Length: 97
Image (cartoon, rainbow, N blue to C red; front, top):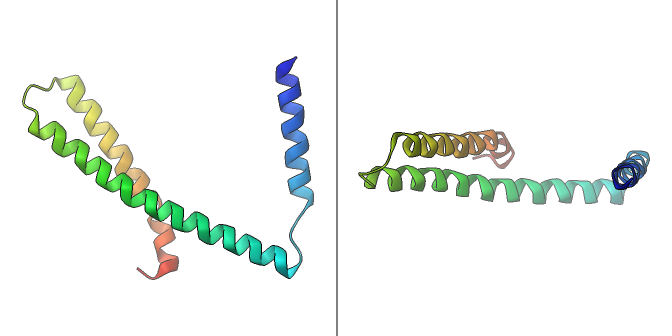
């Protein structure tokens, strides 16, 4: 019962968003501002992901009594943070860096 209420409310929400396409100049400006804000937020998070991945690798390296499972877990988490950093590099093309 609750599932159907949530699904129906989400469908109504998305249908309303799909109908309202910004065709005016102010709608385009708002969309451009949202895209710019999202791009800047993703760039900030991207840098943090890179630093976090490197910090995890350094912390695991400095600890000598780490098990194989923990070492592989640290490696996979660091690879995931590096992947998320690389995924946002396409946004950097817009900023000319």
